[in-house]
Image (cartoon, each protein chain N blue to C red):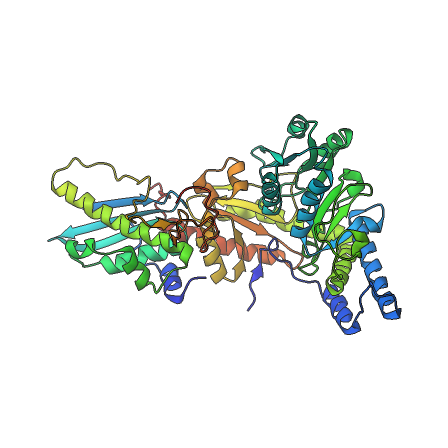
Length: 170
Length: 389
């Protein structure tokens, strides 16, 4: 089901845990499958000195979290901000189509953690790390499967990738 | 090396005697049972023998009440669509439950688009339908009640005898999907009072790709596969004789070994449930304490996700099944688990552990040991699991 790289990261996840006194925390939940991911950052001189994660989720979600922390470790904030879902999925040498949404979770959590750091620095009242209720997709005017995030034709009545019937709008 | 199988609900191994019977059947080069020459007659004899064995397994009044099909799914489709087609002029209402297998759900969905109305009953937290709800749901328009015998995700057995009393009194056809029961628990169609019963050969350690539909004499059901006059005119197409011979042998063995098989499985299940608290904590058992299959436990392990558990157990050489949404194509939580009132997060951590005749007590101990390590590892990663320090 998963390739060797994904399985390797799933079996030996890097950077698992909590950073006490973290400079930034980002937590996201996937409303669809119920996965939850938390990213902790230690930052100095605008650089990620340490990054750790905790994840409640499938093999893919854990591998994505692990790979994301590897990519982000040591990056400057500017560099880290440009890390996309695609970068993580590519570094893992691909994910099954219906698991691509797991990679969104990773990048989203990282961006939230960076934002949390910047908010604190700017003196914005620190709010409890908030679980996002929904994914924000900037898909433009294309249609995507609400279940697995695969691009669909506008008149599709079911998703080829995950076989969900699409009675709802997409 | 092959894994230790704790996923018998997905596939049972063929028993050695079943393999032998099937290989014997292949080597015999049976002709078509519909042919009237000597070679055809020989095939008929094999078919008759298999049908008798299967009839005996469920105690059908006569062998011709058994129709061989391509498996449980076809049997269910045949029962539901066949009743609808044969009785649709009398009424267009069907009663079912919220925890049926997709074969039932999707057959009924198909009928809905053809103008039938379906009442789907909820279950209690143990996953059982209340017979009173069945009685209340029945209207003058009702032509069929379809409630499963045992559930493939929880192992919980429904009060089918009580439901049958209601349907018989009101002269409504009662179908029960017994795909996970026949061959595992003693089952008597006459005692239950069911009119249609779907079952599969593999549950009794026979081959996949063959199953049966019990049709009580006098029940109006149209065939859904039309063609020749095979299977007493109820299911067209030349018989899958090698598969049917395998199923017949499996049925024969199930009758012979039912008691010892039942006790062996029940013993494994009780060992698992009894010792589980010594290995892990914070879990929910979704299987009914009394009314359930002897070979299946559904357990929701909190704060972790089922696919991860399954993958890690797989590394340890243990095959299990999970009902986590993450492990399904559609990424939707199981309708069965949500019907029990489980939260999405708990549903995510659900494993279905199903035992078979090939499992031993040592297997169960090995499994529990492995499970403990996996649960500890995954809880360390989980943000939902906060250890009290």
